[in-house]
Length: 584
Image (cartoon, rainbow, N blue to C red; front, side, top):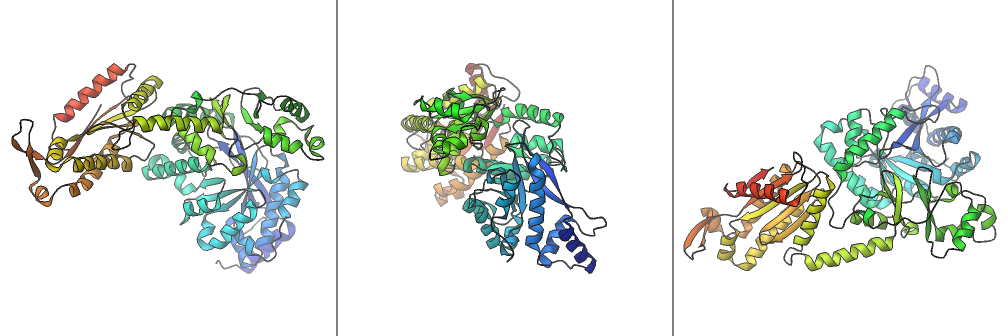
């Protein structure tokens, strides 16, 4: 706890009495299209000669037992000036979890001011810093539950600074994670930070959580975050905090669009299931100014309609009107009179799930099923270059996934259960035809036949499965793993630099295979077995030959051309003894 001087106490009490707080608003930007997603309301001290800063002011409030008074003042000021906020844009408001413990804390004060300034809980996201969880986990969790129970959305701020972040996020079902700016700083120069954020992206995609990167200060940081698939960003490079709510510059917006377009080739994921664009269908759409009574009559007369997508003149998606939810609004004694004159833009579900056409079906299925129960079965909107192209129902997603899973099970290798030749051929053809980045890794066990003859089929199967396990444990970026048959495997990636992955598989393999040999064979460093002519011969221990081909330096237009290059690299591998990696 800090020491508070008499002058600082007087200044703090003056701030409270004279309401010397000025709100500023920093934009939170979509890194998909450069559009504003929302604004974070921040508080600034408006007192000349003040000897403490904003962060210290909150520490002083705790020292003087004035946590709630300061919290209330900052919140009211932020809401007061937020009337300029464009409709649909979220307002992020910081909350100090310690306020829950303040005996002067009052329930319902936020709702009162929301009504006063024409806002609703759906407009608000409360930010609670993960740093608070270190000092007071109970207050942190109580604060989250308090606001979630009132239909507010929750953002965990400074994610990555706490000691038990992922566990707490899972338990509290938060809506947003804001990556701590210390992780964002110089991320373009730090592989460890990149790997960490990659794991955040994957976690948030599967948990249906929106991920926001804070503290973006350079073009290089922005580009790296876009390449990693982070969907929202905030920082001085994108837009400074401002006393009025303003848009970001045209130049930054266009830069984000161009970076996103360029990065699409890095975000493409080879998928056995295919991409969601292949199963979406154009359905009923309406402009945002359509009135509720017209929509009601149209839906009532059209039993085949299950939802209507609201899109603007540029085909950008505003959200979905679910038939069930829409009719619920119009039911009851006053439903029709309340909503008949409202526009589709006002009635639409603003948090509809919208995905790019190139997103894999399995990923969309996970995202759809991770939604809250009240929207679990809502259709998913599919876009291409940020424009509406259709929708896909949860039924379509599940039927497609089940159908492919059945085919996959029939065609999979019976020993390793990995996809077999049909899936491998389909996927490599898809990679070649798409012109996206890809890497094809061919793995072959050396001296396997000798081991199989000497140790028997059961141990031979164990070695095959051990090899497959090594690949699975090393593939952490949704790489495709296939089993051609026998002791031959493949991995297909969406990136070029595969050497590190190949080396990690070899290292893992070398660690695991020792238990598959007898101590005497390990001590000798070789085994004795019969060769193809039936004569006794000594053979080295099993090793891995890995041949890799990417389209980094050569664009493949035909499978024959690709196969020829792969055969040449495989030949070079076989000419070298021991564990070996060759890349072309």
